[in-house]
Image 1 (cartoon, one colour):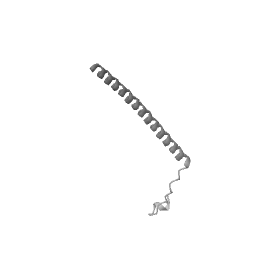
Image 2 (cartoon, one colour):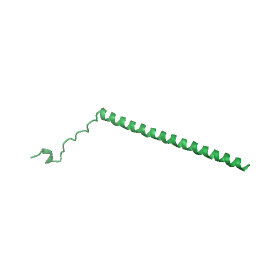
Image 3 (cartoon, rainbow, N blue to C red):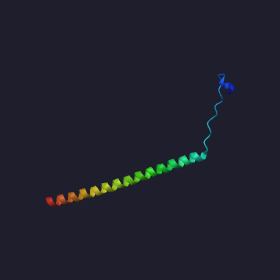
Image 4 (tube, rainbow, N blue to C red):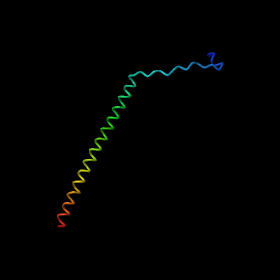
Length: 73
């Protein structure tokens, strides 16, 4: 048979969305923070590697300049 609202223009009252419990939200925030920290750590590692590579190449360049200047004299 169905309810009366199916026969007229009145609709069922829409239930308000459930409030999310703070626990899942906290887990989501912790997960997000953990992921953010992992990304920051990886970026620091990449920056450290880039700095080491830059220092290494600078040292090679300076050594080459010394050899060139000493052989030119």
